[in-house]
Image (cartoon, rainbow, N blue to C red; front, side, top):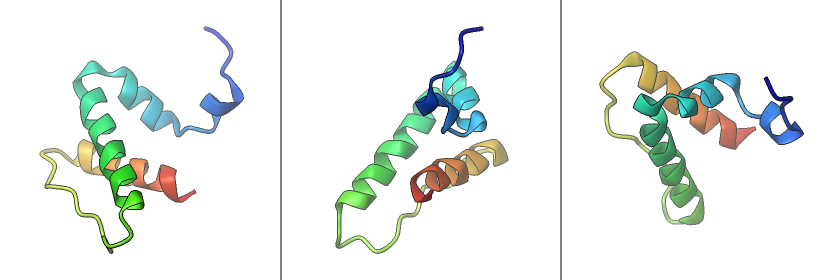
Length: 70
């Protein structure tokens, strides 16, 4: 296994694993796009995702959001 770069080491291992999973990758990336749009819109006071079908994806949404807060 190749050594992780400093930037990769800063990313939550859960998110790295989710992004490597073809089943979850697109949803994770869409979450990230939604969060970036939220930060770019000063008129938007809160962000609510549509309900996710599984607790795994709800957990992923929390981890993606936490990635931007830290």
